[in-house]
Length: 399
Image (cartoon, rainbow, N blue to C red; front, side, top):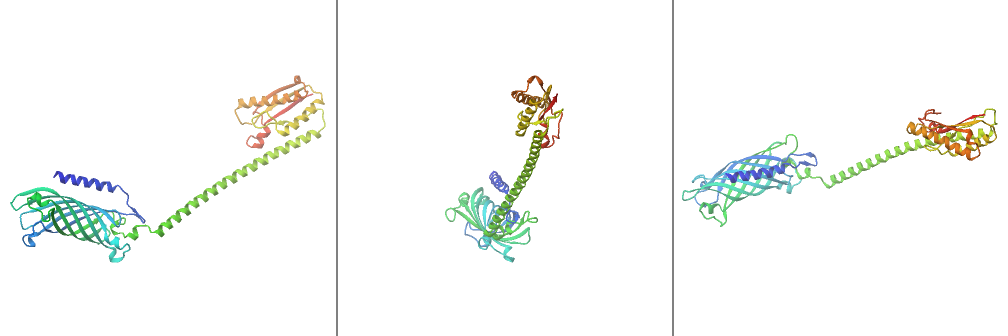
């Protein structure tokens, strides 16, 4: 009994590990598990004595659990209760066999239709243990076990998606059987028996998806043409994704170019305005109340723009040629940065203008500096053009 439990446990572990694999073929999900019950007759070739009827026994019941890996090959576990020589003292054996299976129909005919698509011929080969009780010629009851080999041919016909019937012929070879029973083996190694059985099989999961036992090789495996078509489709899909990515990049580049063009226009307008101010200052006559144009600065610095350097030269000329009491330089910034930082930046800009004026001979005693930071914008800070106008120093001249 311990040996029976050990074999069943080992078989269960093998079947459980196999069950973890997924079952897919080219048309989607597919079932692979099935089970069959068997009954039949046995012919014992242990001792060539008595009539043919005296050597007949029964197989009842037999059970097999099969995992059909693909349309060609499968694995199975067979557990059968056999009685040999039913007309003489009782001889029973419980055989537990692990076997491999080959579908000869699919092997020799990959494409099958109609009646032949439902009929499958399987060749099975395996080995296991036989657990037996045997009454020998001396009337002694022997309880033991022996290794055995099994080979068989099974013809199976599918009645429906779930059910199939089969007719099977088996050859079972029991090694060292008679030596343990106290009777010499026929061929020097062991004894053998023949079994003929009918079976009824149920294919698990076949109601919702195809079963491997019902699928031909042609339907299961991807042909070279289909594989090539899949490769072409995959390449086309990859190219389409690349083209979509290129189009997206082009759209992003186009948007950036449009933004750059807009910024260039804003800067050009600001430059044109500065040039107009310079020209106006050159042509203007000095009046009683002199209105000096403001000068602009580069972003986040106290450095004048190129146009404002020219404007400041004209401011110096006006101051050198006119009498005035005081000049207040008022520094301003845009709203980029903190209020504290911009307050200091406005003062640095005013002092930068003061340094240039004093270096050209304008008395430092008449010049005061003041910072308004970002608090008094001249234009909106929402655009680059507006922020450029706010980065300035204004002149407040008192005559």
